[in-house]
Length: 278
Image (cartoon, rainbow, N blue to C red):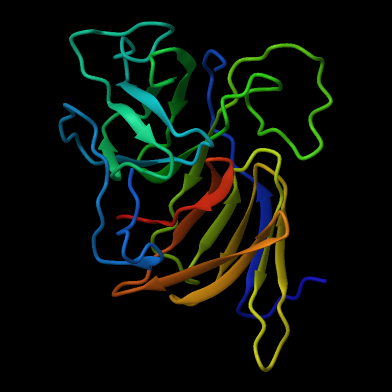
């Protein structure tokens, strides 16, 4: 049974779908202390981009279950870099090798319409997506999926499989828009996401002298849980395939909200902590 207190709120939801009408279809914290939020940490930056008016900010997180993808981006009417099969030899690819577990800088863009082209690192097309972001907004754009072709591309493979007709489908990959909270009356917010195909995730608190461990969420592939009113330094544990994985967050300086997606790296569960970046 799940317990709620006046200072703890738990909300379990499916990931937010991106408001898209288009054809169907970065960067780890310091290695020495991967669970610590510091004043600054490295990001991936797009190649050959200028700095437009900072009306819309997007942090792209690669939580796919493949080693890396190639990601190209076109803004507004500039669809030459992100249309079906089109590649402009005169323009460098935005992120030619976007490794899993990495994320981009909180890139400022001046237009709400953005075109994304995902390819495998050998150049084969995976999917193309056009997203209309809200004006004057900050958000994560989370990529999940394993590029498999045995089920619907817009849904992670489930534990017991999908009741869909047999056949070959487009590569499995999903785009999720998750708004930044930034300033909130009830910090800190931590959103834990199960981006692992075919695996469930059990999140629980640690046992203490005064209380036993509490089950906080049980997540099927593609689902998430939002924890609010959390301390800046906290320890949870995650159970996947009957194995316990420690999940710790230690923040130095100004405390921030955090996105924590789980994915498969070399077929084993892994995760990253991505803090909101104003």
